[in-house]
Image 1 (cartoon, rainbow over the protein chains, first blue to last red):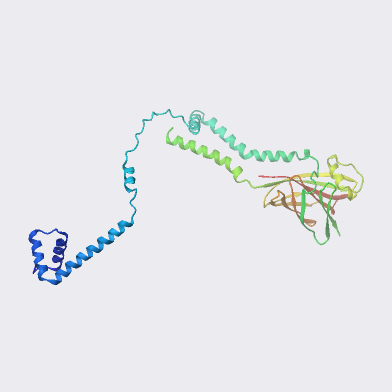
Image 2: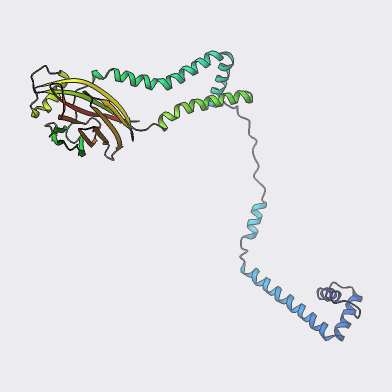
Amino acid sequence: MEGRSEIEMEILLSGYRDGELSPGERQAVEEALARDPKLRARLDDMQALDAFVSAALEREADEVDFSGFADAVLERVAPAPAVAPVRAQPHAPSAWARFGAWLEEVLASHRWQAATALAAVVLLLVAGPLLWNSRRDATLEAQGPLLAGGPGMASVIDVKTPGDTDAMLFNTASGTTVIYVQGN
Amino acid sequence: MNASRRSVVAALGLSFAALLAPASALAAEKADVTVHVVLASKKKGENDPRLERFRKQLGDFSYKSYKLLAVKRANVEVGKSETVDLAGGKKLTVNFRSVDKDGRARMKLTIPGVVETTVAVRPGGDVVLGGPAMPYGEGVLFVPVTLNRVAQ
């Protein structure tokens, strides 16, 4: 095998190890191995490495649990159940769709009336509470009796008075709290 | 329904929702307060029948007659103040501070130059401010402050 480069020799050795060479190439490699101890040692290293890798892969495979693997595969490739034909059902429009259709019709045929009604609704929503409150203010005189509260309805947290006045707290017979302020 | 009309319908729907939603979602609590301005005098006079209960409750103060000068109402938002005129240039400021866990409204009541107090009042309860430090006419002023309710 004189005249071949190292790379070519590696390829030939690899092919020899895997049984991929032609009879002529195989014979040439065997003759070279018989003559060259280094080449023989190289082949031994390659075969030892192959054996080590094979043993490691087998150990890995032994540790994996393949139980149920076949069942899982078969289950995944099992034919899907046949689907019964479904007859199309008549589609009932939703309430929102019906409202939309109605509103569209109203807008198309009664545009000004619809706008006026909308403005009235907005006015009622905005001005209604104000009108109601002012109405309540105007009827204050018609309220119920004064000091309707009973005991425990109110408590005084703190009282402060200017220097020339003084405050006293009283509870009336019915429980109303009076903060009675006197000038000094 | 074409696309533009669908857009109009959707916009109208959203407008309705926007109009209705803030009233409940954004409304702050308000204390509905009534302020009565009462002139109490040690001179005999006519008693306002609306003040009969008040007269009985304040019987210990030896006033002979009671006259209702004014009734004011204020809706005070929590964290805010409302000022009402009393009489003789006096004013009452109601500051609605908070609602306690037991439902009492905590309010600071201030009559400048007279008194400043913080009270906790249940809806329906009242506190009376007044006395000789608030002279008016031939008598003195009493100011019953009633919390009607707390609402949004």
